[in-house]
Length: 130
Image 1: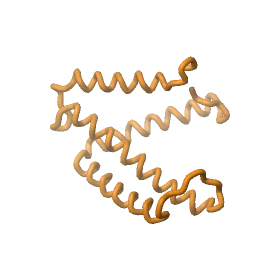
Image 2: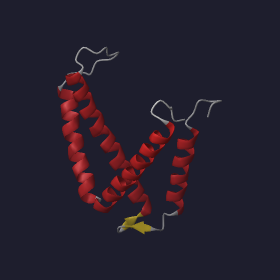
Image 3: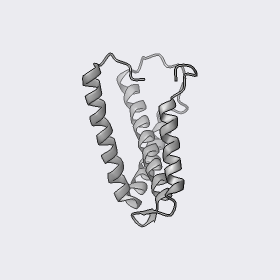
Image 4: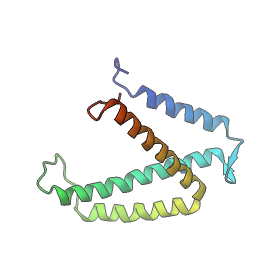
């Protein structure tokens, strides 16, 4: 929203997912309630983001060691490595316990990536998506 500078589309989309989860509480997916499946999907996304962030942090520190950083990571590189190991263990546990949801997650991600590349090609790389 230009007036309040808020991500109104993301707020509406997440609200609709929440309403869908509440309304579909009697439904089930893969032997568990729909709400539990949506929570598992959210956890999978969050853990994937955390793993990606830790890998990106370590890679950037190796690639650009002299880059200005406005903050310091405590006990670098041990904290990011430990966080990466624990989050990889959590990711393996989530994947193991929700295999169908994992395939759904990566399918959704592939569709989003495909749409992003189409939009990027259509609008050009210099266009900022709002």
